Length: 315
Image 1 (cartoon, rainbow, N blue to C red):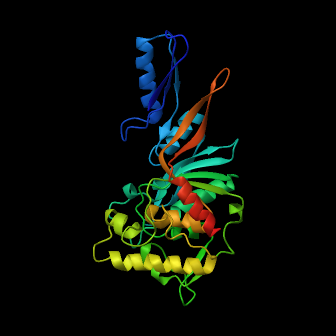
Image 2 (cartoon, helix red, strand yellow):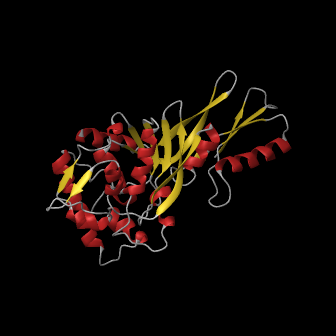
Image 3 (tube, rainbow, N blue to C red):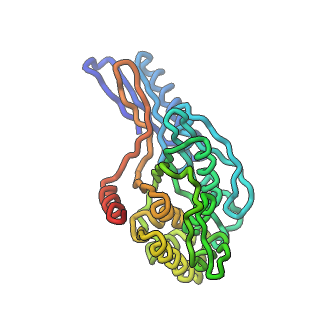
């Protein structure tokens, strides 16, 4: 998106360039600078301001780092299939805010062989835990591009939540662990989670379970076979039922609960997260008397009101 603003004098031009990244080619800021260069070549006295733009997925962290001067925090976390992966997130010290992409820790591009029964979001929880240690209290996390279908239990385990089978053993990782869950313990969750706020950039409306849920709709792209769909979906429903009984909340049918293999559901149920349907997560420019100040905003769809109403009914 490129916005052109004219003042009363038609010979004066002010341009705000807000352009999403071109995957694998250039970042949001690189694209914006290319536009700026072209505009100034045609009209040297134009005033051009750049505003990074991203859709909550790939490029969101880079847009924040480049646009707001956020600090790039490198971390090594557990990848979707247990290997160590290097990733990073953006951290704003002034506001104690972090922007993350779950795909950098548990994304489908990190696996060479898809294995949804094993794939875990544990690394996402490790990334959050690292930010918590730095004093972060405000999180915005894009949850597109996952390799996982574990209902978010991997992330939750990394944050201290515990999931046991009928014999009192840890259930393990991945979608295969969901059917084993009989006991959920929350008393050992990371104490730094107290007061933390999670805004989750989510561009899907699917519920957790059923024919329109995480497994049936998105499972195949992560390796779930036609024969596995029903079994894995039933395991996800079992996980939701035990969660409902243990935490006294029910978000399984909430729009977006099925995002990222049920990670949306985990944020809603365990971390009081807010799923924000977005068409674009962007840094919008606001004019003051002497300069433009960029701040992080979310372009919310009208459907958000319906989602918020459903969430409030559960709390």
